[in-house]
Length: 383
Image (cartoon, rainbow, N blue to C red):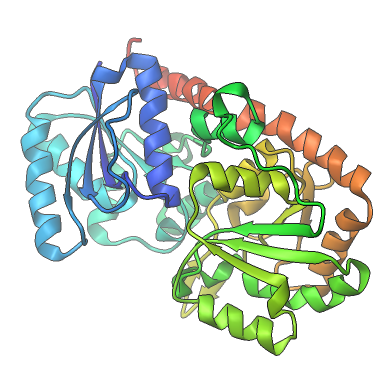
C-alpha cells in the first residue's frame, strides 16, 4: 500500500505541521517508510534531514501566493500519476486538489479537519470535495459536531483522530533515556506557570491576556510566581503593554521560539500549565481551539493543566483528574483554579501523575497508529 499526504507545511513547528509529521510517521510505522510520501506547499522552517519514517517529496514555496498554489496543484497531479492507493489531505483547503486527483486517477482520499476552518460554512469547492471523500478526520468531537451541524457531513463519514505527540518529543517530555537532551531541573527561586502557543493577533483567543490579568490576584498568595509564555507573534507587544499596565511586567517572561529540548525543559520545570482558550464568534464566524495539543504535551511532562471549557480544548483535559477546566472569560474562575493548584502541591502532583498516565495511553504516536489501523481497515485496505 502507498499513501500520498498533501500538506500545507511540514517543516514548521505549528500545530498542523506537527500533526502532518506525526500522521506520516504513524503511517510509516504501519506500511513502511518507503510507502508514505508527503508533498508540501510551503518550504519555510527547519528543512533539516529527511525523516526516517516517511519521505518528503517536495516543498515548493516560501509563501502561499496564488501562483505557488497553482504550481502546487499541478505538481500534485503529476505526482499522483505514480498510482497511490490513498491520498490524505492534512488540511481541508487541499481537499479540492484531492478531489481532482480522484476524478482523474480514481484514488480515494481522506481529509483531516482541525478547528475553525470547518466550524464555519466551507466554500463550495471544499463542500463538494468533502462530499467525495471516503473519510473525514476531525481532531476532536467538538470539531466533528460542528462539521455535522454547520457543513452537513454525515456521521458515518467522520472518523475521530486525536492529535498525537511525536515519539522523540514524547521521550523528552517523559524524561526517558532516548530523550535525555532535556536536562534542566525545576528552578527553586521562583514558581512558574507556563503557556505555549502563537502570539499572533489571529490567535488571540488563546487567552494569554486573561492569565496576565489574574497575576495581581495570584501574586498576593504566591509572591514568587512567574508566568512564562512560549511563542511568537504580532500580538506580543499588546501583551507586554497589558502586563505593564497591571504592574506585573517583571513577572511575565516572553520566551519566544525555543528548541524542542528547551520546550521540554520548560514543561517539566513549571508547576502548572495554563491556556484558557476561548471559542469566539465574531461577525458570524467561529474561531478557537480545535483540540490543543499543548495540553497533551504538558500532561506527558507530568504537569497539571488549567484549560478551557470552550471548543475542543476540553477533550484534552479530564476535569478534576488531570487538570481543571474553567470558563475562559472568567478571571475569577481562572484565578481560583490556578490558586487551588499552586496552594496544594500534592494535589497538583497527583493530577500531573494521572495526566501523564492518561496521555501515554491516548496521545502518543503508538495510539495514533492503532487508530489509523482501524480507519484503514474500515476503508477496506489490506495491511
